Amino acid sequence: MEINKIHNTNRNYWNTNADAWFGTTALPDYGVKFMTEDDLHLFPRAMSQVQECFYPAFGECREGQRLRSLLRIQA
Amino acid sequence: MLEICCGSGHSLKYHADRNAAELWGVDISQKQIENAKAYLNKNGYSARFICSPMEADMDIPTDYFDFVYSIYGIGWTTDLQGTFKKIASYLKKDGIFIFSWHHTLYYCVARSSDMRHDVIENNELIFSKSYFDESYFTMPVDGSEIILCNRKVSTYINALAQAGFCVEQMIEQTDTETMESIGDESNKTRKAKMLPISVCFKARKL
Image (cartoon, rainbow over all chains, first blue to last red; front, side, top):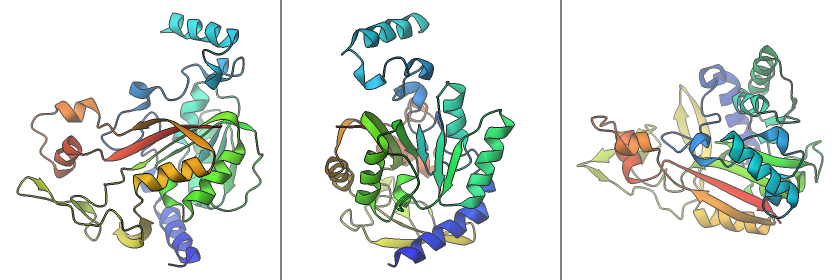
């Protein structure tokens, strides 16, 4: 199927029906009848602290250990 | 962080409420972006928005984001591999990509695309569409129509690997409330008790 046709069809749908879907399937929800971000914690809980120590470095640097203990205190 | 298919902006607000430093949103629909902009402004936040298909070349910085995510958006792409490569380029090294979409069996099992609802016969989930069929199909929705395709789980995993991601987590779990529900005998609930309706991936850029 032609890509332009797919884009045009889907764009038209969303331009027409955006209001009907306002706020639907958004965080903390990942999908219908599915575990939520409140269950899964895929994102770090305190985003402001991510700037101090980038999240994937958890456990690899001293700042990461400090961040983990901070989060533990908050929890 | 950057959201692909930001819709009405509610997920961006979720992150703004949690002190995300910078918010970017991409969506193919101008109306969705207008809604998102208004919703964030109403809540005292702002974001940078780009109206574009996610597959297209966009004015988005590379090696820049800590997180790129998409809640029920990635399946709209017409080029999964190209989209993942672009997303990898936007992320810093070790940056995180999180996305959810229909489970890879969703359109294959107990689902009528023509009627757009779940079909259960004699308490059995009928496997009605080939899992191998990744061709596009048109589905009527709300008096209009959309065009989608179903993709295999290997298609997602291999595209992530090719784009330079390592999968840290793949989640296919119906929520506890549904699993433990008694009395709700809707087809959606019965299906969700036997099969995940959605799937979620968390991947890290290598």
